[in-house]
Image (tube, rainbow over all chains, first blue to last red; front, side, top):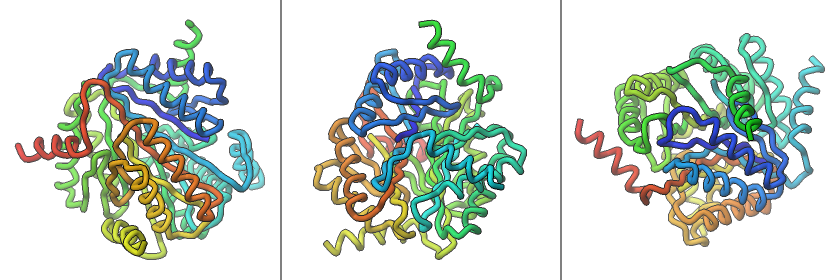
Length: 98
Length: 98
Length: 98
Length: 98
């Protein structure tokens, strides 16, 4: 699972069209993903996920951004599988038991 | 607006109780926030937001984590105000016009 | 200890003058810091460090950037103190024992 | 160019042996890299760099960490090539002209 935040440089302050283009890349790749206000959670196998991240950089460059700076969190675990929803539910369960 | 991901070290693989404790800190601080699968979006004035982040570190240490490593994205803008929902809607508008 | 990477948006692709301005803020604050190719390590007490980070955002806005997006890693530990050099030496010791 | 910070979870507070293992992966891959106090700068072609990052996760899991959480900054640019040293020199030039 990763959390991705792509920032185009040299193209003005509005980045929503670049973010939208990245959402299309993730849709086309058939990856589970969920946008939030400061990035996008993506779930999938390592190679597929990073191929999509590379494609996002390519697409944002093709749209005219000479420079792209991305921040990413990447989580892997070998003890058990856990979906994006599992993680959120696990916290909410703790909170609801207050 | 910030995106916060607090990771306690030296306490095992399950971090949900620490994340839940941070959610309580944000609730107590009265800050707008929205958890996602790899962090939490927080909206508010600089000093209030960072006082809450500091409190998260303190609480996680008090719960027994000897070490805490957080990754954060921090966004400020002077041209106009934009809520967390505004950002998401702005992208969705671009996507729906496909 | 934190690792800070400040990115100004809406000002072109060259960000070195903004990074230089942030280095001056850190110098003026009297904080231990060390620049690398993708950010700056800063060592100090929580409140002083985050006051300097806030000042960096203010200065970059004053220089004309309407939007600033920063990525940060923040590490705290209660078990022992460890400087930036301690961390690097600890890894180098492991490597040299190969 | 990327900046990589790999954090093993569920293995105690000392992470230096895991960081050292990742340095060896980068050496074996023949990639230019430079460790700092809160991560490692890596320079190279996309596919080679991300193959090495994947190998870091695998190695850290093999060493016994059931969970790995990495934070990464990824920068690409199409306007010109710029090494890690170029970036630092560009800022130092600005500073020295004060």
